[in-house]
Amino acid sequence: MNSTLTGPVATYLAQVRAELSDLPPGELEDVLEDVSGHLTEVAAEFEQELTAAALDERLGSPRQYADELRTAAGYPPRTQQAADRGAGRKALRWGIIACTVGPFLLVVGLVGGSFDTVAFFGLLGLATLFGAAYLGVRALNGQDPRIVLDEPRGAQWAESIRGLVDQLPPNVRRELVTIGQPVWWVARGVVGGGGFFAMFGAGAVTVVGALAGAAVSIWIGRRTQQDRRWLWYVVPLNLVATIAVPLWLAASFVGGSSGLFSSSSYHNDPASNYAVGGLALDGQRIDNIYPFDAQGRQVSVRLYDQNGQPISVQPEDCAAIYGSNVSTEPTSNLFPQPALMKGADSAGDAESCKDTTEAPFVPPPLPASTTPSAGTTATTTPSTKPTPTAPTSTPRPGPTLTISPTR
Amino acid sequence: MDPSQLLKGVLDLAVLAVLRDADGYGYDVLRRLRAAGLEDVADASVYGTLRRLFAAGALTSYVQPSEEGPHRKYYGLNKTGRDLLADSTKTWSHFADTMSGLLHMEAA
Image (cartoon, rainbow over all chains, first blue to last red; front, side, top):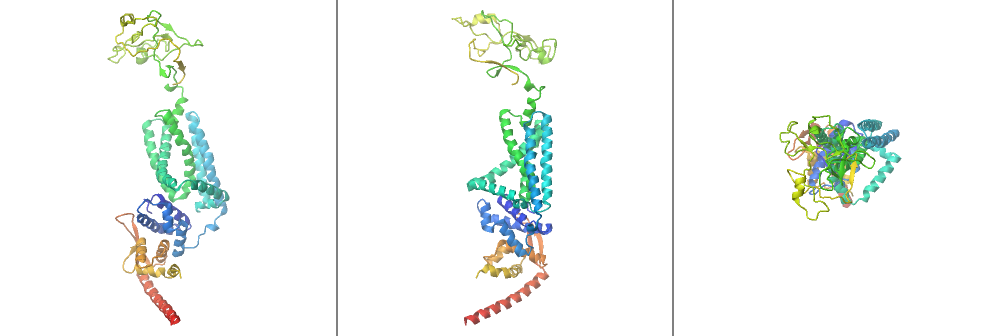
């Protein structure tokens, strides 16, 4: 069997195969080998991009082609009419379960909270999806998957889907198949494979999982074109992917590099550093506060919010960084808090580290002062490294000070 | 009269005839038939005919790699095929003569 066929040719071949599916397997493979060679040659006749419509015009519909072949080859007439009617109904019913219950549970798992929830609903959803799909394929009992279209419900849905597709302009339809399909195959594989491994953490594994997922997804897409029974698995998985891919993209844009699964589990993990509170002004993180009194002298104050709760920041002094001197209050509301003295940390170890509560900037002139003098402020707060871009805000309404439990 | 109707009865013979001198793969057979003037031959029916003749034991089949694409399945006449061709040729000649005689008699 030639496996290099793509696009309309592969689809056409798959449809011819479906029409001849009642033949003994050996003869079916042999004749399809010829047909596949034929289609390859016919495709080569066309100079531009080959379309399904052009193929139909040149060879007749897949059904006509198969009927011609059947008559000329002297194969017995199609036996599908004698097929067990119950098989189609059962196969369709299991297919519907695979398409509804499975994806529903998976989506509940995807959006729902902790790692445990994700794992529980994810596994339950996957089990339901694959179990129902398997039972659906088994219900077919080796018959042509198309028998589900003979069921009233199947025929009705096929009709309405065809109606929707027919509303698209032909060129859009063609683009969707030639460009949209491969893109979709890759996207669902990347999200499926990457998402699965993202649950287990490591970024490198996620990347490998995403690549492997894309490869598997493309392979599955090709297989499905040739053997329509795969649809029982592929349609529900596509439904899941239709929901997961946009969610993933949204989560990637919002949450930076972290994916859907990792970000949702971070939010629910109190031990994670994402959940640690902080002090912020207009979204900018505040590491320390240097109060000055009315005379421009640096003072120490304790800060409280409107509820009497101490306001504190993560300590960034020597003790916090090198873990020495653990007796210090873990989070103090006394400001300014000790911070690393610039330049004193050149050796990068606990011994050479020195703390300072001196402001690393020259405070701006007092609002009352009409003749600002850099000299006076420099003497009150000696600084080794004056920064002219230091906070210029004098106490005035406008910026809002926020304390948020999460970043 | 629709030539494609006539063709149906003699497609076996036509296919055997184009394979007489050289083996060929399906598309090749199709091309030879067209080149010989059987423009209306339907692609799928030629492939079906090849399968039926093969099943009847009149053809051999083997796969050969091709330079520009997938492997090709070649069909060729075996002893049974040659006998069938000789036999069918006689039948056809007899039939064609009879028809010609009939038509000319009518015309005369």
